[in-house]
Every structure is written in structure tokens, then in C-alpha cells.
Length: 97
Image 1 (tube, rainbow, N blue to C red):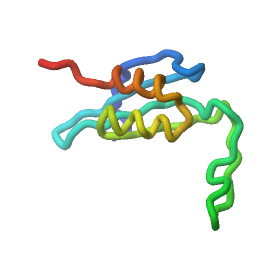
Image 2 (image 1 turned 90 degrees about the vertical axis):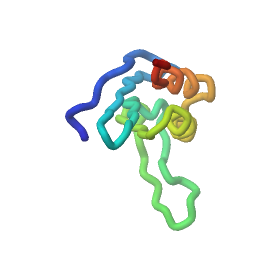
Image 3 (image 1 turned 120 degrees about the vertical axis):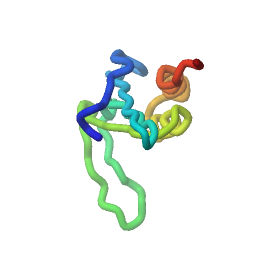
């Protein structure tokens, strides 16, 4: 599934670079946002039994989903504002035929 990703949008949202891509075939549609972490942080910090992984603000981050709504929630979980995530999800919506 990696070679047939089509870029839908390239720009900046929430002061983070955003490349929104889609993949569509007979089995369905997948969405991906390629961005960065936006802030230096430790992934998994505070979760019992998990050793946190430090990441730099500029490290690459990929967020994937099968629907725009799922993508918005995953982006919020990834540190985007609610407004920024909704804007990206709106860009990912298919136009009505």
C-alpha cells in the first residue's frame, strides 16, 4: 500500500508541516498525515510499565485512519488542536458526487 499514496494537501496547520495523503482501492480508503511531533516530548511517559521514548519536535510522525473523523481524533491524540484536526479532516472529506 505504500507506493500508491496520492497527496491531497501540503501546507502548515497548527505551526506544523502537514502532508495529507490518501490511498484508495477496491478494499477501501486509507488516510495518512505526515508531520512532525511539534514539541520535544517523551512518548509513553506516565504509563505504568512503559519506558518513555524521547522524540524531538522535528522527528517525523505519521498519523493514519480510514475516515476523516477517525483521522481528526488521531490527530488530536497526536497533539494537534481540535480546530487544526478538524481542518485537516475537512480536507480529507470526499466531495459529494
